[in-house]
Image (cartoon, rainbow, N blue to C red; front, side):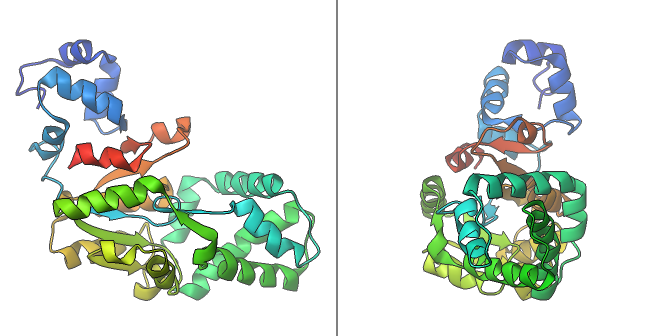
Length: 296
């Protein structure tokens, strides 16, 4: 599109108020782009943001949006630290919620995107998922000074039941409900693709989300987990579309963005905390789901 407008990278960078190296990295797929910079580029090229996504360079027009579930559409309420604390107290552990949350996040970050992406792609059923989380929670509990093997297994099972599959400790993000309503009215096809237990379907239904989606794909129900591109293609095929016509939105680079891109979809990461790390990923950057309106 830049070349069709007769602009060099330097000219486009100057008009958009961006650095030339950023334009170069963007065109090579080495940089992600925030919505603000999309506006700058669109203005510099005298086009709309929608034109950026409907051009031959960027593929087909977006006809469907696929969503992740946890931390994309729904969040823990109360916080993870409080929910975990309730379970831990039943096993004699009294830990401040902020400490629990901090240790959880530190272990997650220590795994890194590559490890999480590789390991999650191998999970095929609920047993495999529970074993992965058992290994994770053992590390977390060891940091809290708890090493009882049987106790770790019980805590892991209870966390799966009381946290991940319990609609009573989750809330739908306000921007999630709003964007789902808007997209539904516009006739955009919608799907939900999530790594979770089969009982996750009940969580989705009880939270009033089921009615928005043309299809729902849960990893344990199909025997495939994100970031395996096959789970994305199940949803895409059910919608009767091509991968290039689909935008996937999720909060995890390791499972959501990696998998969506491997499946051939456009990908956007949602980051309501404005973290510098997520701004550097090679995908569209969103800090509010309502920004999706500018991409359709």
